[in-house]
Length: 158
Image 1 (cartoon, rainbow, N blue to C red):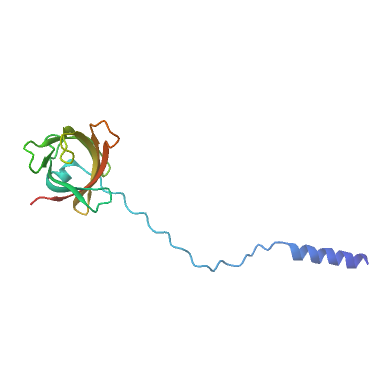
Image 2 (image 1 turned 45 degrees about the vertical axis):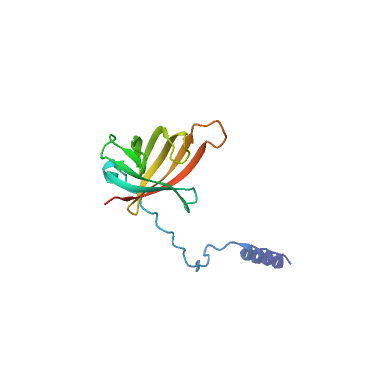
């Protein structure tokens, strides 16, 4: 009887023991997509020249304004020239970092809201040969409708 009990204990022990030889995982490995390279850092010379720009609503489905944007290889001489406005608006280069150029302009008379002064800030990038970005216009008014976001897209002028 002792032998029988001992054999049962040994059989139970062997049956419950973990096997170190796990079966091989046969599921196919999922390839991790490669990390895209970081965009090339932008320099002012990359955007130097004249650009025909359209300013669109946030959805990008309606053009609000068009203008000629002039950029130079340094921070001096940047400007926006609206049609039917005699004097160009001076643009300040606030910073250049990574793939973006941060700019600011104003106050100047708004071409979208007659009789109202506006200040704009925005970031520009080169994307597929176009100068693209988003600007925020801050209008000097006493109502709650004082800010507008404008998407910009420019092509090099010939």
